[in-house]
Length: 293
View (cartoon, rainbow, N blue to C red):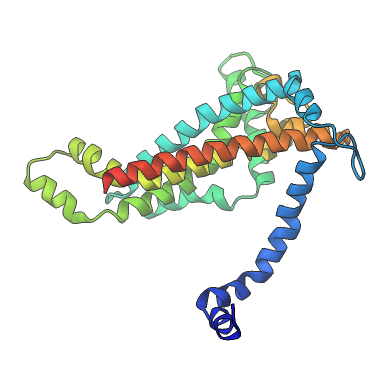
């Protein structure tokens, strides 16, 4: 590359954009990419800072751990139940609020409010509701029903799922509303002229053209389901009831015991699973979009 072509390359808009992005890229690399690469390396060693390579021994120990199995199964159950529920409910709310309704703006604001509430405040509200001496048990006692230890019983998974729905349904609803409002109104007018009813318009127009938004909402919902540790940790502590012992609990306990190798091995497995899942969803979405075009 001669001097003239190098100068032309530097003057390109892409290079200018790179200079603007450089501070953020450097910070992202220093605090995320480099530590993650170092963590992957640590997962193949027998000790931090100068440990020798032991291959996949740490991964074998993690995969044979009963705590890891329990955390993985609970995480899959939570994601398998919570994600379809939050997608279905947020889509229904978006369809309702996309139409002229009484107090529509107030309803939109009420569903968005949980997004701006800090996690600690959210947990405090749910503790007031589901504590042994909380509001819900007070109602049960008032109606002469037995109190339930919600967080130390099989109900604990339902409580966490409800918290996840309450926290994330507003954000997904906003995304669906944006997707609904991007669909041209001419499609519906043409369908009505041709005699298509509302159900047929829903399945042949709305859901079809909402597919890219739906795939994005699915990805965001899955990622958010893996971040539910904050709520469960503040609600139930380091070692919660077995039904809500999540993957992040396992990794947090490994960190508390300074077992960095198992921690990084579990984190690498979790990231690998997310990457495979996201790649599969993106490939399905790309094929669907190509067929639609």
